[in-house]
Image 1 (cartoon, rainbow, N blue to C red):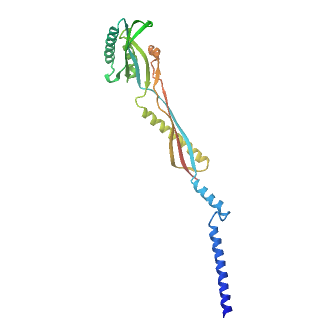
Image 2: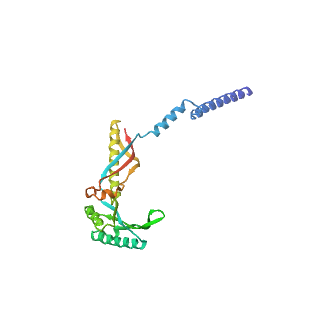
Image 3: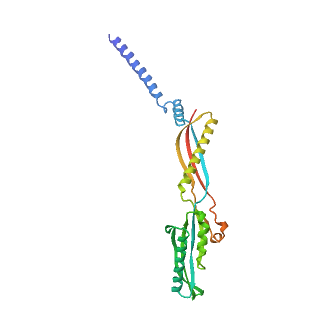
Length: 253
């Protein structure tokens, strides 16, 4: 009986050791670090998951030319006399005449803005004072460009005190131009993405991300006073507006 008991105990111990070895092998198989062959398989599966679904990344460009519809005229008056009081008084009187003339030419009071009011001595041989200079400047917003020549002529008609210091042209609604450029940029991006998806043997899926990048809004165009004196040069020209957008699409294969 004792021998039989020992034999049974030995058999049970051997079975336990075998079972533990099998379990150890199975557990080791679940650890990529313990089983070098399993590591690449898990990594490959993860990479495939990251790259699915395939993506198409494109840049779209929207560009258009717009014509400004507002002119800003920098004008004013200037007087030089022997005394400061006389110079300032005459300049103020000339500025009042200029304001009345501009209002009579159809410019609204809200579109007139004083930009300069100055009085200073004039030197022939410093510190000897030769006289005094007084000036007053005004910015005139012309909202009807068909009226631009008339407004310029109105300033000049004020008299020898009148001064023209330049003009600039701009859009009254920059946002409308930018919206139109965005429409063009997105349509361009979609057309490019559809072409690439077709070339790759798939079809375009959903938009994943949109990122607006370089934006060129309308900017005022400046002209010097010399150009203002010539009627034929008073033209708003055109301004370039552009938008670039990066769009990422999914691709169905």
